[in-house]
Image (cartoon, rainbow, N blue to C red):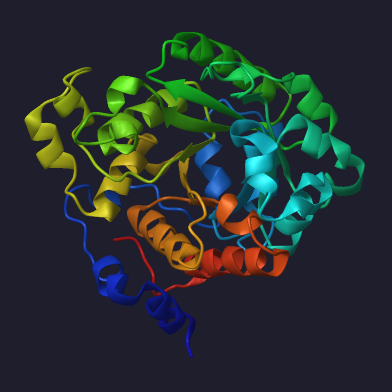
Length: 352
């Protein structure tokens, strides 16, 4: 069976809807499409040669190395969601080495995790797979729980352990977002000066974004603007949740919007909603990687492949997928990672 036939079989009833769709809102000709020369998008920028080399290490590693696409394993849930709830399904991942091993065996471009996880085995693995150190987190031991991204270490610490990149989260829309934007902008500048790349988790967070009728935390307009602020503070790669709805500005009635902008830029098709996000990443000059979301059991492989197809056909640059792969035996996790990679390697799946 050909690879494309396997992908169609996994997608099932969604195959034609996702694989045959043609986007007519933001033409693909206007996008900077991922290709083997992905790092060349930065040669006119202010990124120094050391940053370009770090980006090249990331883009050229693993199964997708040299394609312009990324498949990164992110495991910071031990802090973000608590370690017990993250790892009880597979307690071997309390041992940080197994996190790194999964990324290596899964053929990932890189592994993103906490200072502690990556530092514990830096001398053994930092030269074998690109490290991305997540420098800030939300912790859940404050009672009642608060939601704020705080620094857990310094950029220099990440550089000392051999990381090629630093990652950070900003809760756009939260009361603390002004401080986080300034804090991470400064951290990213320091990372660039030290020759490291930068990846920003652009998450929307505000109680008002969830109404009785809809949860707009994943709305295309809100997440798209979060992306635009992210590239403004010089993120080299944007991580964003796949959009599931739209009209956040309009229906919550905040920020700036025009009814005509929705009609001009997008439809309700998931590929168009994702392309709205890509457009806000400087038309794809800054790569958009979408998250894989939580584990739902037997449907994980279909959902992972579906997300990869939407991201690729929208003009995105890959997936950053954790829970679907590490909350199960390692061989099953590797299979899911490889299935995602097959989408990006398949030439018959092109930009919509």
